[in-house]
Image (cartoon, rainbow, N blue to C red; front, side):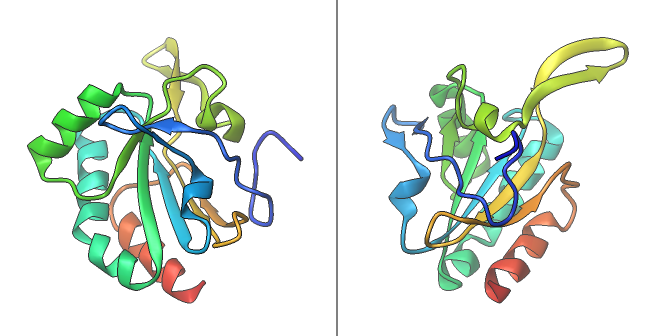
Length: 157
């Protein structure tokens, strides 16, 4: 298996931290579809829009048999504030551990911005089937219209 799991591969079952300090793993959603969307940072314009878009469609995702999970490296308390500030209903989780889920997926990687090199999250969304196998991957996501496109794919899956 390559360092970048793709459609047809098992989704890594790595535990994440919930805003209340609990734990959640992809296998907790076994038996239904799961949309895991990774984004760089709470409370930045693109990430706020993406989270609001997924939250606005949360009931439709649920009706289509899919759970949502938004993931970044931000700490749980920051997630809590972010969700409260923007009225987000799509659940969030922190992937702050070294060697965590985003590392397993190869999407926590070196980025360059204005000549500065740093580690960052590549905005990526995974649609995972009820059996834990990846059905679809969206990489280097553009936020506009993304949640709607993912919902359409969930309904087809």
